[in-house]
Amino acid sequence: MLIVPEREIANLMTREAAFDAVEKVFAAMASGDAYNFPVVREAIGHEDALYGFKGGFDRAGLTLGLKAGGYWPNNLEKRGLINHQSTVFLFDPDTGMVKAMVGGNLLTALRTAAASSVSIKHLARKDAKVLGMIGAGHQATFQLRAALEQRSFDKVIGWNYHPEMLPNIEKVASEAGVPFEAVDLPGMRAADVIISITSAFGPSLMADHVSPGTHVACMGTDTKGKQEVEAALLARAAVFTDEVAQSVSIGEAQHAVAQGLIQDSDIAQLGAVINGSHPGRISDDQITLFDGTGVGLQDLAVAAAVVDLAVAQGIAIEVDF
Ligand code: NAD
Image 1 (cartoon, rainbow, N blue to C red):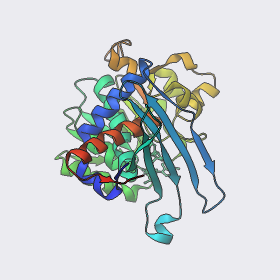
Image 2 (spheres, protein in one colour):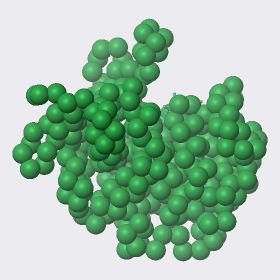
Image 3 (tube, protein in one colour):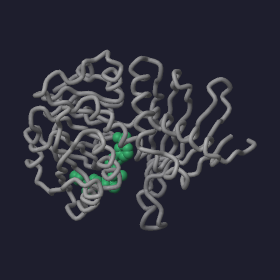
Image 4 (tube, rainbow, N blue to C red):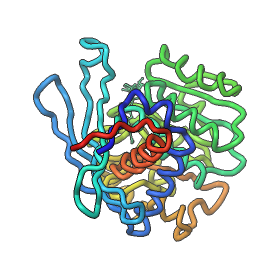
């Protein structure tokens, strides 16, 4: 069995490799070659932690396994550790033997940023210039860095519920040489692409804060009850997702579906656009919305890519298990 520790991931994994892995696995999901197992997520009644498993099998990439982990809200304050903790386990699909154990913390941020980037590549207008960010926490910096590579953005505008956190994303924009401006939520009307990545349980971005032709990537809602955008926005938009079953149960679409504004059948898989079996954006005026809920297969795809890189560079630790 191979081990790739968390400390090695930053030096091994690139945004490009994460993007390729996620784009491929979304396509495999849409063509029926890969599927996710039902998600287990439990409040374990200890340290206020949420713990669970996201797994799946990709027959095309021969990737089988799971990500185990969750959220420990007291880690940072009590122990100086990050609150999100996860580990990916890969298995040999021919024998069931464990193949690899891979640190999953940084990979989670990279694969989540890759998902919104893949959506921008396939759904945003080619001439998109202004990138809007809602959220300025840990994930937001990864999201922004990756998104800036998808179009020739000449400005980043940002809003955050806690405005004192905005310098986190301003720093990423200036490192990329793109000017940054803090705006109020109606100011998001200037954006051609909007990424929302917050832990909110109520909408910030309203339907009338979004101009025709915008692509919106909703990346923060990954649990029942969370919500970042007004449900009416989904009724105005062509809605895409990583996986429909997750979108309507734990994703942003849960609210629009519960309110009867849209149905499961109104939501398309982003992988179908990648495969060419769905046209994707059909006009410059259309609002497209990607509901990125985060699937286990994304984790397995980036973990498998990092194991290959670690083996090639002689960094993987081999254990007789
Ligand atoms: P974080 O704690 O670092 O940042 C939280 C962000 O949410 C901050 O910008 C904060 O100001 C904002 N926020 C908090 N309360 C808010 C409110 N009431 N209204 C509006 N904004 C509010 O968290 P993070 O690690 O950046 O994660 C952000 C979200 O992304 C979380 O909900 C997390 O579960 C989710 N996430 C999703 C995926 C996926 O695959 N879709 C993957 C990883 C994380």
